[in-house]
Image (spheres, helix red, strand yellow):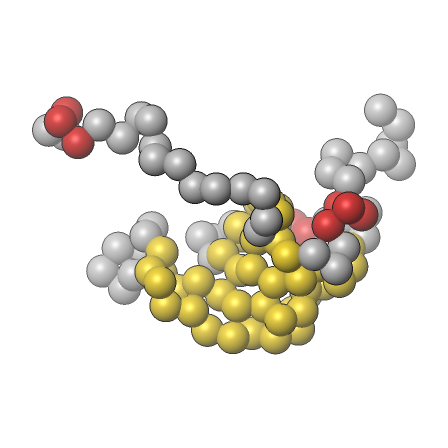
Length: 99
C-alpha cells in the first residue's frame, strides 16, 4: 500500500447516507458530500443522536438537526453506510452473568 492510498475508499459513499462515530462518543448521520486524505468529512442533512444524561455511554432516540457540517478527520472513529447494514444483538452481552 503506497502512501497515497487511503485505508478507506470513501468515494463510493459520496452523495449517500453514512453514520459517523466521533471520538468523545458523539454520533451523527447524514449525506456524505466530500472528504480529503486526512479523513475530514463534509456532510449535509446531518442529524446528531443525543446521549442519555443519566448514562453518557448510551444513545437515546432523541436527535437534533445539524444541517451542513465538517467533521475533523482526527475525530472520526468509524464511518458506515446507512443502507445495507442492520444492528444485531451484542453476542458478548450476557444478562445471566449477574455482573
